[in-house]
Image 1 (cartoon, rainbow, N blue to C red):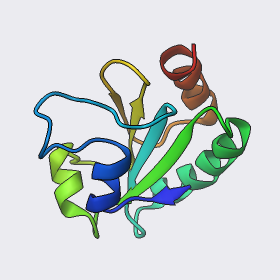
Image 2: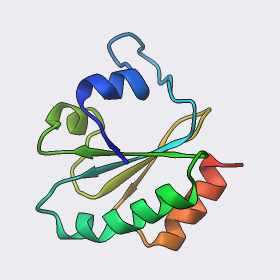
Image 3: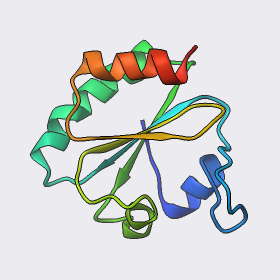
Length: 116
């Protein structure tokens, strides 16, 4: 899993300064985990995301954004609670899920929304 900064987000996901409408730049669908180091539910989600990264290797990218360090990105997506997970399909609009999600719920979202 890769940690994104504003620069790497623009390069790998979406450059909001060049495009007004959503245009995903990734070659694979993605999940972005908006988290903070002090957040206990975020710590519960982290190992699940690591498992999913292995389970879906080559089919899906999983990124992490530290909301404390990358406040501009958190504000861009109006993150008010963490963890927040952004599910980004290859085509179409991303969908946000709030709170700690169980692995089964994340797998369902991946299968239904990202890998079809």
